[in-house]
Length: 502
Image (cartoon, rainbow, N blue to C red; front, top):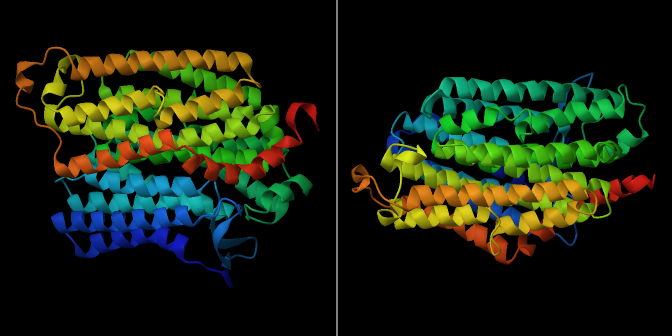
């Protein structure tokens, strides 16, 4: 039975998927590319409208769409249930931004062009579905759907050991999904609902068929693999290194954020007591991610592998912010972690985009073989510099806002962990500046004297991401206030378990 239907969220999810079907059945070559660009442009307008339409003062779930009994089995019922709150609205916007960036990043793809753009559109629709789903089973369906397009994007259009990296990505993710599915089913048979808006209250009152701590770990392990958290991170460098530029942009910018989003939506909202009890573990793993990831990054000589390990390091800050749930500054720490997810998406997306354009010209990502490129490609040099400085947290950029908020939120709860994490900021400055110096400045190899700068179709996505970095860096309230609206109920749920209050 259809009870509520705004239509916007369904349109945002299925417009890219419908576009992919049109490309698969009717279009070829440059027509498919142009159609994909038009589809992602409309999608960007829709996701921007959804973000602007969200009333952060009102809060709660908005633009709700619900079809009860969508899958009416005798043993359980799945509803088609969509909605956004302050936590998901910015991530829907981020997906719209990176969707059109990925199409521009694929502008020069010639191999099986229609299939490439088809899978990009399916990927975008699936990820938006994850952020909008309010039925836990529907959430899981979209979570799994994302695997298919990413597998094909890496295995067909990737480089190096592309089949190995694609398969490794799928195996790791499916492993996490298997644990998550057990937790989802256990929750349903304990509460008789997949409704994610009711589950927090239902779990607190239900006689669970498994201990709450077991269910907490069953669900969070899937999110930890996707984020990724040490020691489940090893799929990420391989996938990034061998993926095509567009897939790397989507993987770093959006897919990793699915893990963080799951920790907020499921782990923090549904298991507040367990999150507080095990926040020490999240803080420990967060610091390991930050320091280990940064130390390994310094040793990298492949540009994409360097950025991939830097993502491992930066996702550690998300864990550290979530671990602030233990203290009285939980709201600040969680907001910083959410901001880190958004800002990392644009910053790392810009890094992978720029490196991809450099590789298209120089035909190498090996840092010792590069140098002096700023003289031949000043626009790309400026792009790499902006992304690098934002990544190391330069004030005025979005990276600074996210990291300082995390430190302010986590330090009262975890003094020493926050102090150790600060070393990661120093290491980040070291490897970023060293990378930029070796790639863009110094002597230039003679065979790179004829390299050209970015073309107009390449400048457009760079300009979009640079603008987002500075807008959030200069006026962070545009995003942080929306996040705060979605995090307030989570913080309220945590407050009863903080510092032994309950």
